Amino acid sequence: MTERDQDPAVLDSHIHFGRYADDPFVVGVRRNVQDEPSGFLADRGLREGIRLLGAAGLPFDACVREHQLPELIDLVAACPDTTIVLDHLGKPTSATRHRPWRQALARLAGHGNVVAKLSGLATELPVSTLRTKVISLLRGALEVFGPERCLYGSDWPVMTQVTSYEDWLGLVREALTGYPAATAEAVLRTNAERVYQVHAASSPDTRPRAKA
Image (cartoon, rainbow, N blue to C red):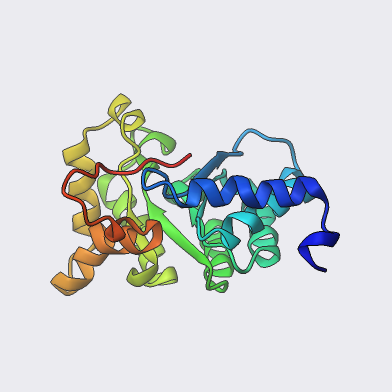
């Protein structure tokens, strides 16, 4: 199908996303779907929009809950040319009964267009969750995806309801114990630079870019 044959609305969407892709202050799009009804991630319009993001070179941040992970697996398979960032590791509901969550993560990791953000667990798990259990979940994600496909996220300022920026960073650093320094640096910084393409900004006056 040529551009001339396409729906005008689709062509307009291409132009729309292209404009944002050229904006140095936009690095991707985040859609909070965690409270949407079952089947939302199968919506044709949503999937078409995510495919257009990939065509524009922009990643899609998916904020979902654990029970939505099977739907997300289908979505990433339908949008293979778009980088999908799994926010908050899919929000596991338990640090002890996590086998289904880890199995879903393994299926997601089977798709090369998915990366995992090490964030959000502090506000999702019960406040009584042991520090060692949180670290175990983080290490599980690192093992499933590989450190080259994991990136640090703070979930700031929401995380300040239950923890501090420094404490969460410390947890992630503990989870990275045993990895080479260069690998830890990639998870904490350079993987995100690659995914969001922030390293391309060379001007000293360019501020960090936000997701649309």
